[in-house]
Image (cartoon, rainbow, N blue to C red; front, side):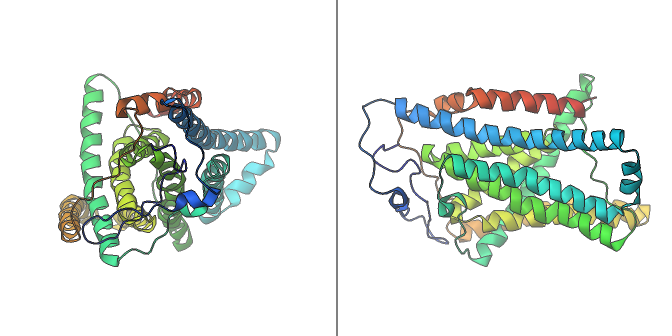
Length: 355
């Protein structure tokens, strides 16, 4: 990394579609003139990377903590106020869904704001929202759907390998409600819209953008690994990792979170809608629908790749100018104190989904 630049590097806003052009480099202006050059060596970069890792992993650890606190508070309410159970039972499935969405929003939004404030990231860098051609967004959606099928196959192979060792992984229950239009709408919104906005603001937004000063490949891979870890189970993890790479790449390619948000939304909405439809279909037609999903997604993924090639093909990611090697950056990031805490919390939380 050129230490004469702002620690945030640039906003990487490429012209798209078409071949890559030089990135705009104006983000240093937000903090005044560039700082004075530091002494030779990599120590300033090491310190920045450790600091970045600690704040990011602290925020993600707080996501875990928020879910634990919510469970503890609900348990205490049930213990101290037996009548509270009647209140919860009396709530419709739609009401319970609204409560869960509210907690999900707080659990992701507050850590996002923490990173934003702690690292002093300008909003236009943390949340790039450049207007993107509809064809580019569509290519991102199709590529994400195709990659999700690859993630399903990887998860299936991992499950078979673990089963041969006597281990049975599982995942949280996302079964749709069996009655009520309102409850079904809340289910689909909580499964698609809220994650598409909040998770993208956190992972492809403030997390990945804060790490871009150490190189785009590092930021892309590292944010995708963290995204997979936050799912806390071995079935969703591979899918989250692979789709996270696609979502992150299209964010870097376009300089905007919009394609990632739209692709995330469509992917989750289709998965939720298919599960809702299959509940109400006769078994024969449900099986036909289930078998048609994978070839349809793969076909759309192939179309997405063709569209991307027509729009300029693969755009190389910007490398960091730091003297640190790639493996050294990953080692520094994931061995920082709060990163180790986050890893331990992930392992502890994942154990509950292993039988």
